[in-house]
Image (cartoon, rainbow, N blue to C red; front, side):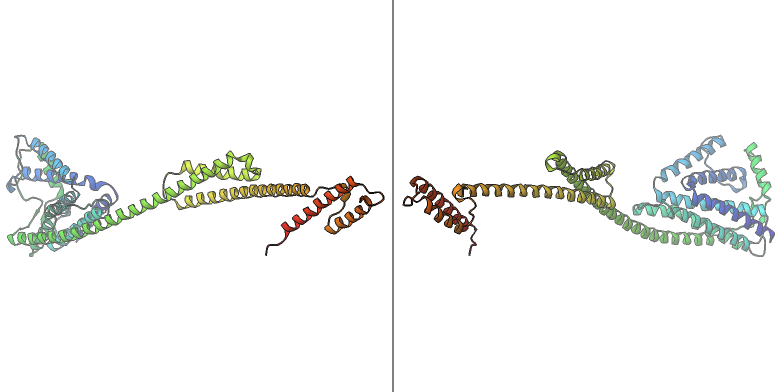
Length: 434
């Protein structure tokens, strides 16, 4: 039991560390390269150090280390090319991670010693599913997805199939080993010593079982794992197609929203510039005709303050859609126009007063021309007074009287007729029209 507890504790620590790197760092961008190199190292050590298993490893050159270097370069180049397509890179990442976990889990079980196959099966399966969940969360939880063609999605599904295949095969082998016996494990340090010995003398082939013994892989296990992998492929294609479809809808909605925002921004920007142009035009007119309009100093001070604020907005505005800026510019324009209208209204009143005074003066002149103030009729303002004065004057200056004078009488008569005619004409002008 102590072996199982130790293995679980070690695996929990590793999973926490691995999950932290995958979910909270950019480790996902380089993890495929690291996993590929790690798997190549394990492949090389097992194939070259354990001759009795007859595991193939490419032999391009006679020197084994040169072959090892070439294989690492090839794997890195392959991952680099695949990483250009996000879906393929994600599938590589999941498959590499699953294979890597198989090796790590067996190394932990080997380090902790032998324990029942059912416990080993649960230990490996649960931890493998957790690792798979960490990969999926890291891939679909961030900006590591994209909408691609069906062929890219299908190839990604093919590359993803080793993950369920490896997990299912490992689980079935460990369950099958629980037939009344315990999985035998080689002490971990013995394996480490073998690695060091191999590095010192690569030509030496070790004998004996590799790490864990008591495992048997059958054809039925292979077919079962293959069926599970095919089912996972179909589910992946369906789910990923749905995800791509929803991403496409979101992209269309985002594009539409951005277009609407751009339209609103352009409209608001156009209205802001139009208001600023009106302010410039109004202030230019007032500044040019400052003396003629007789603008009060207080009004001019307010106008300059408002215009300075409008100028600051004009040169600091970056074209963004800003409702508050538009509202403030509109308010400034309204205040400037109100002051302008007040100034123009005052000018109109002055002009009307001058015209009225001029008209009254002209009327008075005309009245005086029609009604000259003759010395004989001074103080007479009404028709009756003029007639009474005329009768009195006739008694004095009529030629038939004792002191009469023909020339004076004719002058009095002429003035009388002029005065009487002017009063008659003025009365006619002031008479109401029916």
